[in-house]
Image 1 (cartoon, rainbow, N blue to C red):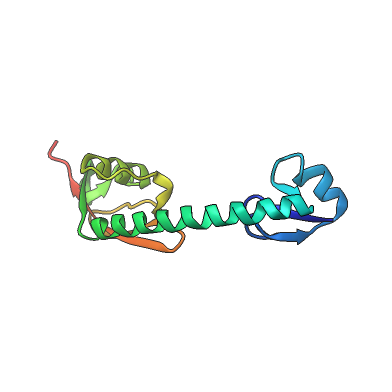
Image 2 (tube, helix red, strand yellow):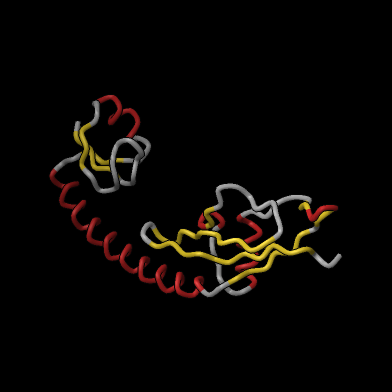
Amino acid sequence: MNVILKSEIKGLGKAFEVVKVRDGYGRNWLLPQGLALAATNANLRHLEVDKKRQVSRDAKRKVEAEELAKKLGGTSVTVSVRVHEGDKLYGSVGAQEICEKLAESGIKLDKTAILLDEPIKALGVFQVAVRLHADVDAKVKVWVVKSAG
C-alpha cells in the first residue's frame, strides 16, 4: 500500500513523501491516527499544493529564525544561583531557567529550543546552543554566578 506521510515519521520518511508500507500498518495505524493519507490521484494533487504552502511557510520561518539568531549572538544572560561551601551549586541550571532569563530580556523561546546535554552544575561562563530552526542554530552566553543572599 502506498501512503502520503503528513509529518515526519522516524524510520519511515519525511512529511509529504509517498512511501510503500504494509497494508495492515497503513490501514490499521497510519490512516486512523491521521499520520498519512492513501496515495490516490486526488490526494497526490493536494499533496503538491500543500507541499508548496509548506515550503513557503518554512522559508518565512527560516528568515525569522536567522534574524533571531543574529539577535541571540550578542546576547548573554546571568543566572544567580545559591551555592554552599566550595562554590558547589545546590541544584543546577537547566533550559527552563535559561528561557526565563531570555524572556526577561525580551526574547521568547520554548525550552525545547535550548540544547543542553546536561544541566549546568558549576559557576562560570557557558556557551549554550539554541536550535531556532532545522537549519539555524545560535549560541547564547550564560553566566552562572553566586546569588547575593
